[in-house]
Every structure is written in C-alpha cells, then in structure tokens.
Length: 335
Image (cartoon, rainbow, N blue to C red; front, side, top):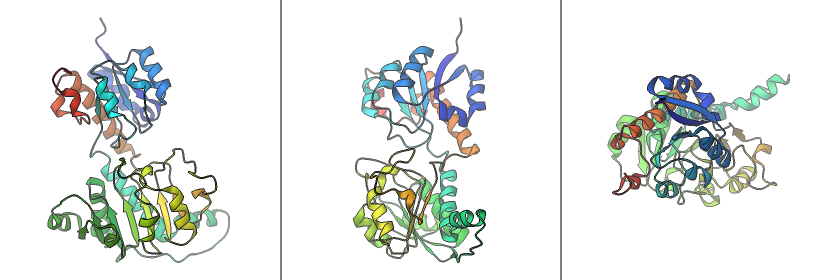
C-alpha cells in the first residue's frame, strides 16, 4: 500500500523551489502542483486527495478550508498570513503555519536595494540611457542620511544593521512595543528608538515600513502620517500593501508632500490602482517591483524546507515544534 502523503503546492510557490518539492518524496511527501486561486485550489486538493497544502500570499476566504481534511496543514510559503482566515481554519481543525526568519535577509537586502535605487535615481537613468538619452543625474550618498524604520521586528532590525553598519546611515526606530533600546543600538546600530511616529520621521530622508498587515495597521500610512514626513523623504514599503493608503500616497507624491516612494507590495496584486484617476505608475517619483522582496533562490529554498518541516512535524504529532499560527486548534477536543 502506498504510504506517501499528498501535499498540494500552489503553482507560484512550486516553481520557486521545484527541486526541493520534488525531492520531498524522499521523506514520504508527494508534492503536486495546483492552482493558487481559492476555488480552483480547493478543487485540485479534492481531486488529488491532498492532506496538506503549501500556499502563497493570496487570499483564501472560504473554499480551501472545506477541501482539506481535519488536522491538515495550511503551510504559508512566507511570513505574512493575512490571506488566511485563522478563525475559519481553526473551526475546521486545520493547522496554519508560516516560515518566520527564513526570508528576513532577502527582504532587508531588497529594501536597501530600493533605497539605493532611489538615492541614485537608478530606474530613471536606466530608462533614459537605454533609449539613447545621455542624461547624467546628480544623486545623493547614503552615508549620513536619515533612515527611519517603522516596526523594529526581525526584518526591520536587519535593515537597520545594513544601513547603519554598512552604509553609515543615521537610523531611527519606531516601535510601540517595549524593547531594550541599548541592545537595539548595540546590535543593530539604531541611534534611537521611539514610539511616536511624528518624532521618528522628523529628520528622515527615507522611511521604511516593516509592520504586519492587521485590522489596526490597515492604511497606516495615511494622509496625516504622510504629511508628517519631510518633503524630500522617500517612503519604502516591502511589508504589506494594505498598510499604505495608496490614494493618499498618490496625492502626497503628486503634490510634493514627500519626495518619492519605492514599493514592492500593493493592496491589489498584480498592481491595479485603488482609484483609476490615481495610478501610481504614472508618477515619475515612484519605483515599483512585483512583490519580490523574499524571492531569492536562497530564501525560496529555506521557505520550502520550513513549510515541509511544519507538515512533517504535524504528521508526527510534534505540534509544539511547529510555527503554528492558530494555537487554539490544539485545545482539548481538537486533537
């Protein structure tokens, strides 16, 4: 009798680490590639009789939870899990996991790449040079410039360390949680860490977002907070699209309230303007990349391994070792 366990992997994630998913057969897991959209994914899970699912950042509002058998794992290939309904998953007895830590460096490096591109106007220079227009443009050095990191979690701290110790930037942290300020200065190069947003961005040339997408952070960068930034400041977002009010951002960029924005994440992906009359793609002071902060060979391999490890741990009943997001599912009566 075949003892392999079927694991459905959504197509974008399967492609990113195909070799590792194919090799999972060696640990008794047969990974099959399935569509990423909720209804189509659920249908494929039923057809393949998959017991677990590795999935990306898309929204899964209803169908998938009914397709996966109780005690199955919904393993996020990544850290953010705002696309999962944890309450609904818990009601269906499903274990939801993510892969914390494994993509921090990749996202931090991409953030710094966007900051560097903004400082030297790299996208504009690339475009003009390739079309034959020789237009040398004066940029700025990052050394000595102010960077404010909004959200001093693992990724924000990585960004701070690279910016401070690597580029010689002056780094301010903005964090509402109680933290060890001395350790943050020593280990990551923060000059100071404050809780007040206006204070944090008062002398920032670059403001980088590293906060999760929750009901409380939706539209966090609104008109009021954008107005508190310096007129030459650039906003960087490699966190989640929902934390920025894109209509307010368009107005701020158009009206010169801030200097520019470099965005890797958007409220709608692929990007579509929140307002047809406020399309960020039409502005010259916007740099856009298609949610690739964690898309490096190394990070994708680590995410695949961690997702499969979480599934293996669930199979073995070692729930306490999992990156479990909905601990309530383990309460008495659910085991």
